[in-house]
Image (cartoon, rainbow, N blue to C red; front, top):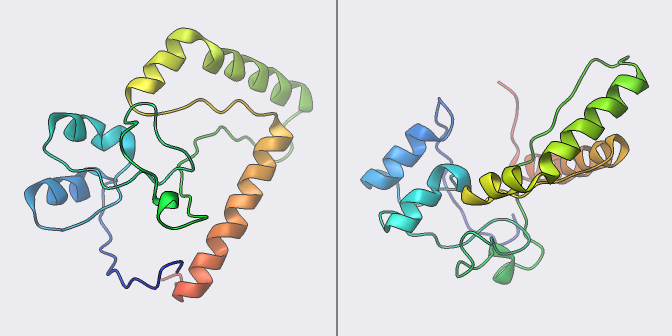
Amino acid sequence: MMTGVDIFHVPYRGGSAPALTDLLGGQVHVGFPPLAASIEYVRAGSLRALAITTRTRSDALPDIPTVGEFVPGYEATSVYGLGGPKNMPAAIIERLNKEINAGLADPKMKARLAVFGGDELTLSPANFGRLLADETEKWAKVIKFAGIKAD
């Protein structure tokens, strides 16, 4: 959408493993595997990283440029969070948020995430909700542009 490049999307079942296998085996020429799944192949030299899709370069692979360095404004990241029922009591939400953020701030957890190229994102429940709303809006534009329809 941002470059006018026409890439044929090949959907895979089973997460990133089958696509990564085909990428490593030469059955496909380019892919967007998650950094956590592909970083060891990059480090071993069996997979060539062309760019990182996050806004900033990864501390785990600092020599790999971001797509945004070539396509201004480009960013695509994976965000993992915890959700609960719509009517979950505020006290439980706040306690979970406090404990999860404390765990993510632990140096051992940060170091473990860094091994896989991950970063912790400690947010309040309200800020996480805004992040999800912003991501939904961004990707809705892509879906509309691409004419993607639910089967």
